[in-house]
Image (spheres, rainbow, N blue to C red):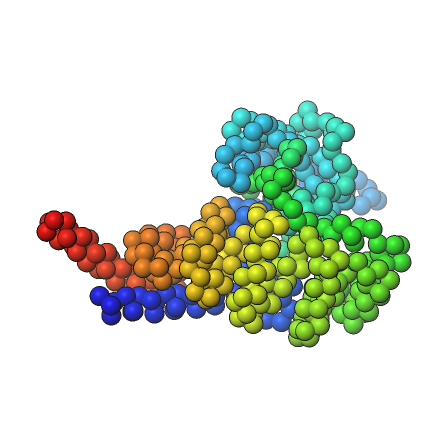
Length: 425
């Protein structure tokens, strides 16, 4: 029995290595500016069938250029749910948000949270006083994206700029809640109309900010330097961008967003101590600004600094329990490496619960590895089976099945021993 237990514990270590390598391939790359792992819960739409091109109807007249007709409406369906899987407490408004910062109400949800409408028609909706033409910090895209970053993301993902919706998203609006969003990039008439689920999160539970409050108070010259730095970044002029960001923080040391961008450039150049200092300066300027925590925990992950990884992810999920679900996953990994198994199990279960759209099957794998360490054989087997169900074509399927076979044998021995003990009594 001891030999089998030791063998299973060894498999748990292998599982952790597989999790680390499988979920964090980008951590070996330079930069660290992006999310280290698949981020479940933030606006990834359900896959839809490959769009069928539809010819654009044009009207030709002598000696004139072709002018496209007004696009025909597109039928859209979907559902809004609370983060815990329940329907919204009251009907939510579905809004179309585009990079021009225009917000157009499109329809309402029913009592179950479902919605459907013709995108592009009035649908009897009129903007009210609560509908702003400007985006709310941290709401657009669910990750604190602004309109320009959303439009750039649409282009990067192969969206057709000829489509009038290529830089637009749908989100839900309900007072007191923050919404995920679903991209409309490339959507056409013959696509699957179902855009998937839009999740709502209670703002009362969120202390952190995806847009720095102190940065919004920067003086004009500092704001200009920061904006110039962002433009230089988009053109891959990193030397110029670094100069602009340094100028911004020199003019206004509390410009947390400029410190963040400066840190990303320094991290990309592998100037890690300077990058870490820049992120720390961002948090000193605005301790509720979330993205520096994310950058710092990714650095800790790359360096396998498990204590720092646990601390930074703890701080991040405390400030915002919804926006960064991957943080639960890496918090569990850190506590596992620190042999803090109770804390590891708690975070791993939170990672499983946060992955409501089943984007990261490795959450089940990691939980199984932790339960093996705690000698919870039945729980470990259940988690590993959930992993194979979520990822039936996983590359490590054979290894997991072998582990499950050993777990089942161990569970059988435990049950037999319990029955024998009961019979003797």
